[in-house]
Length: 86
Image (cartoon, rainbow, N blue to C red; front, side):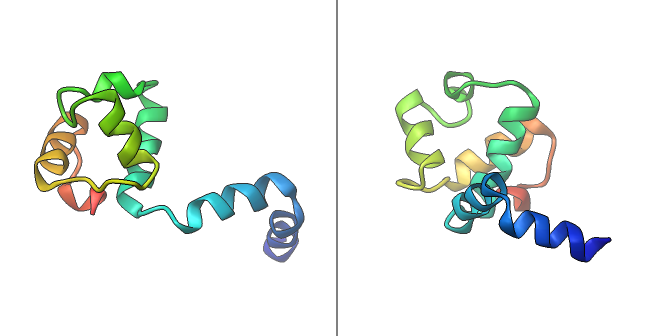
């Protein structure tokens, strides 16, 4: 059964595009995206933890990195370990 699922995921266009998008994404950014989705947050909702919407956008697109201060603030907000964002 697992083999069939893997084959389906390899050949399904949506899975292919999703996996391709994840290839270059850091685990910290991926975790942040998941948390934003789970909590139904927009980029502007993270102004206290990260700053401007434009900075959040740059981080989510991989143009900028999360700083130690961002990571600490996000960790406190979501009650997760800092390592989640590293």
